[in-house]
Amino acid sequence: MPKISNKGHQMPESPIRKLVPYSEIAKKNGNKVYHLNIGQPDIKTPEVALNAVKNADIKILEYSHSAGFDSYRTKLALSYQKIGLPINKEDIIITTGGSEALLFAMGSTIDAGEEIIIPEPFYANYNGFATASGVKVVPVISTIDTGFALPPISDFEKLITPKTKAILICNPGNPTGYLYSEEEIQQLAALVKKHDLFLIADEVYREFTYDGYKHYSIMDIAGIEENAIMIDSVSKRYSMCGARIGCIVSKNTEVMSTAMKFAQARLSPPTYEQIASEAALDTPQSYFDEVITEYKERRDTLIAELNKIPGVKVATPKGAFYCIAQLPVTDADHFAQWLLESYDYNKETVMVAPAAGFYSSPNVGKNEVRIAYVLKKEDLIKSVQILGEALKVYKN
Image 1 (cartoon, rainbow, N blue to C red):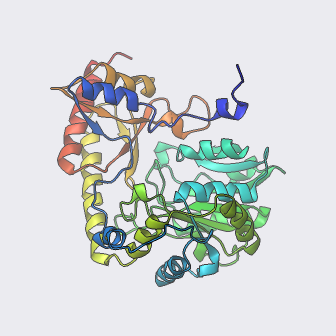
Image 2 (tube, rainbow, N blue to C red):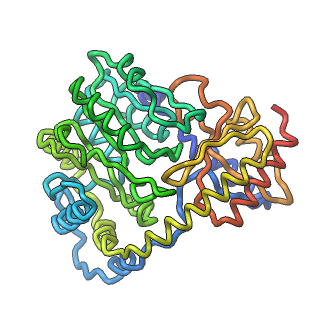
Image 3 (cartoon, rainbow, N blue to C red):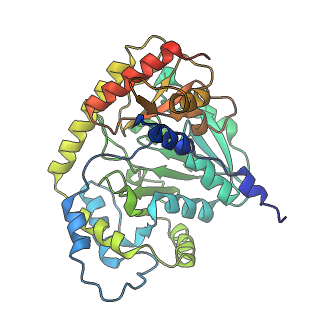
């Protein structure tokens, strides 16, 4: 029998999705499952985006330009400029989700066997993108005790070798919800400038900030134009996860011309989804005001309820819509599977994402889970109640 590639064997499972078969069995057994495991908002997609697709008069579904619609890139650049980011149409390539943008970024800047430093815990698929690109992830650990703040710059410097090509951050963070301060972003900017590295920032949760905190983009830092690469997406901003439209953004013309070769190799991003994404830029500010208010209330509800459970430790997120919770268990993977396979509370249970998959360091995060507060407040309260009851009877 022909053998699977080593890369295929090394490709990690998604901690967010690997328990889906167990949730399907739980549902077949008549249990209701509250999905705290995945960042799929229940917020309605803006009507202006959906109507643009419904009203599109297309006779031939043609390829678009490999960089995406000219009209969309022009309008997207203007939207960035409105929030103070000096981005032009030429600095943007439209991609099939932020995922493809990250693959383009890694493929354009890092050779196989070279290294990228990422503060962990980090979005689990960064491991997958790195594996697919032959890139070695070098983690620098942040902890729940600091709310998952940026580790000291000295910790980064200790890890920099001749093979280091880039630093990757998610801001605000998935899975932690941490929002980097202006000082932390400036520290990273100085570091990549000093060591001639790329700074890749996944900024797909930019709008989701709370308590008066402000998001600071790497694209607004003078002096690192050649180092900075921004990743963006419509998925969470407009509750359009299924559209699979994102972009890679950089002022570095060599990076963008290289990324364009990857874009040409996959031909073009999807047409209808670009139509929807371009129209979504007309979404009124009132939509975001309501969404932010709703997520803040959900965050406050979730954190308050989690803090009622003995032995649970949680950091309050400043952005995005996730948090990492430390549980009084030794193996969160086993606990998460047990919740679906062997437990119900009045025919209801919960699905969480074990956090070990958000680390690349072995045996770290074993007692942590990621929780997405994308459900309505009543469901969050019920979910945490079920979690608390489960912990009372679970045997480590």
